[in-house]
Amino acid sequence: MAALWSSVASPARPTVKKESLPALIMESIVLFGPPGAGKGTQAQRIMESTGLPQVSTGDMLRAAVAAGTPTGIEAKKYMDAGQLVPDEVIIDLIKDRIQEDDASNGVMFDGFPRTIPQAEALSTITAVSHVVAIEVPDERIVERICGRYTCADCSAVFHDTFNPTTKEGVCDSCGSSNFKRRADDNADTVMSRLNAYHEQTSPLAAWYDSKGIFFRIDGDRDIDSITQDILTTLE
Ligand code: AMP
Image (cartoon, rainbow, N blue to C red; front, side, top):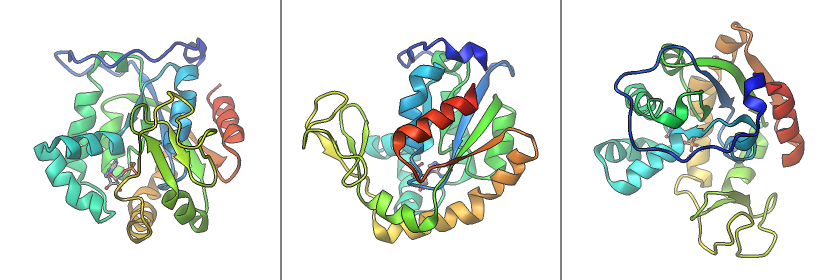
């Protein structure tokens, strides 16, 4: 993992795709955990240290929904219900994304894989060096998800109570005053999302543990301490 520590800024996402899938030469990281664990927040914080671009299937799906693509139209009904989008849709998205030039040294997955078939597919696409689980008890998830909002311009993540902007209504990262809240960040949907996590995603912990690449981090602490622990784990 030493090569990841050069503090390389994440390059801009190119639009040109390679002709074929790359061989298993990359080492990627998976940020694992329940919805609202802080995977997106931590991914943004450690992106620069690792030099790996964040690949969030949730963000990709929301972009597809906003663009009204066939994938977005199909995904929306599952997302609105707090259910997982079918594996084949997700795996196709990842196969495409991993071919982009900025992924050639691996990526930092956020919210993927979420099922054993997704993890099996991933193992044929890119090597994974670390699966970092950010652990937060269920009873903390609802309050964390329901107060969450992001900058509409730079995607920085904030929270009404736990991580508000320093100046009210102004993004700390880019100064924008445009903020948005996710349609599925509500008390109704969060229970379905948590059920999906426990039933379909949490079995992956044992799967990755058996491979010796699973690392647990206590995610119920201040944001800086969690970032520090993740960086130490990746060292
Ligand atoms: P997230 O932003 O990661 O919380 O994802 C939001 C929603 O997108 C989830 O509740 C699922 O409906 C869908 N989703 C995101 N990633 C995946 C995935 N890897 N597998 C299946 N569904 C996903």
